[in-house]
Length: 305
Image (cartoon, rainbow, N blue to C red; front, side, top):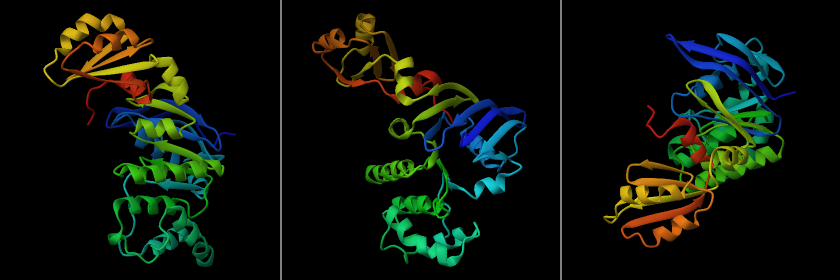
């Protein structure tokens, strides 16, 4: 049985269909990614799956319960890390965990027994009595993750869990999420960091304008949609990038230009690299293709508000 099953999900606001027939399934114990540009329908999809918003049509099962009719029962075994921290500033770190545990009907003694291990898991040992105002942004984010685990959930929804964090804090969050997956938890993740999705997700879907445009594992999607090698060429010292693209574009399978950067997607980059060695004024980076390349190809490079 899927930890989360979605079939034919639709939701319209003010005449605009923001979720347009989505279907997907999440296996227990896996990390599933829901990716898309701003306004693609990700947050609405999460709200529908949690029973916080009623769908216009479609079917949802969460942890074996029908949503939204049995949403309250389903959420008893679910944790949620929201996009923005909503910790209570009037309470200490441990008091935030205590009060939140009470929402699940847990006894105070049971919650208090879990608090030390939750704080340790979040890298916040010694911060039990700290006021929220004294915590850094990274500490608050990790406390929000600990709070989502207070009821020992089977499924954890994470809405952009590492946004705004420095690299050290992001890596700690990633390590903790990997630990949760190793412990058999199901993770449902939205993120704008493609390296995060590539590191953590067993499978994912990319949605745009409420519709699913691709689905698979990160590795499979990269192999399906993108040439294996990428050479990014920058015009930084008076080099003629446009002329270089015209002269050498045929050496790549595909070329995209964005501002002062050209992206050469190649099966064999060596002929292009040979030409770049004799191209003054141009700087380049040669790398393997990644999930961000897939995302940009499928959703475009234009800004989304």
